[in-house]
Length: 292
Image (cartoon, rainbow, N blue to C red; front, side):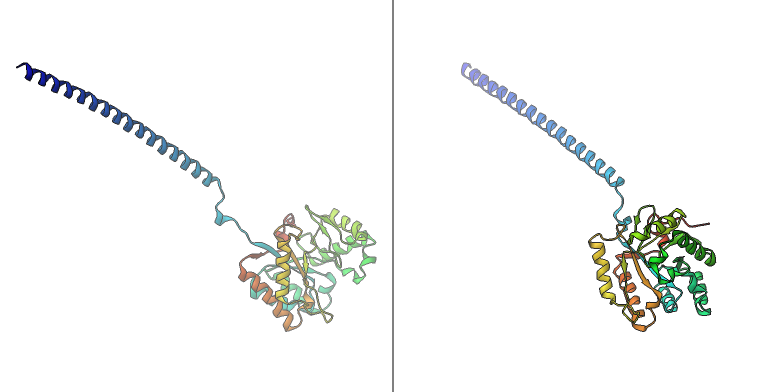
């Protein structure tokens, strides 16, 4: 009996120790699970906070698709109405792009054909008309700009006789700017006249790139060459206003089929690239004071 009792005691002792050990393991396991559960909740909470912050930042950011990365080109044509104006109207309407015609008052009243072309330009929604003086300085530019009072009177005469609806102007024979952003004079002797025009609330617009003529008054460069010049100006930030380029050429350079085709291809290729948009000069930055 004594022996059996000892065996039983030993067995009970072993079972007791085993139970205690198992209980300890259970406690450790439960503690570990609880700790892991807390860590998981912490990670989830942190992730949710990061997502919330990310969503908040995304909501504040401007949607990428709403950003217009196109460059703006302003097609401007001087000295109209003139030989080539009829072809110009056809090109602009075929390509359906806005353009600005800087009109010479004397040319409008030079012949019945010029007066008729002026009326076509005036009633064409693709065109905007602006002031290019009445006499075009009689092509004696240095003498013309010596007398600022006469210069102002010449522009006023053009504005009144043509019933122009805005104060946008371009000086004949000079690349002068007078806007809210620019005060640029290419020939210093013209400065006083330009200042007086600006004081009379004229917005003077020059240009960034000119499509020059040959000796026989046709467009000199090919459309490919002109597109390369456009790209170069934008790439090197040579335009007066970033992402805005004013192109100048003249109605009278559009008399022949080849010149007409070159201008048409120039516009068409710029349109097809989808990197550019066209606007009237009144939409140029800080040139928006149209008369009622």
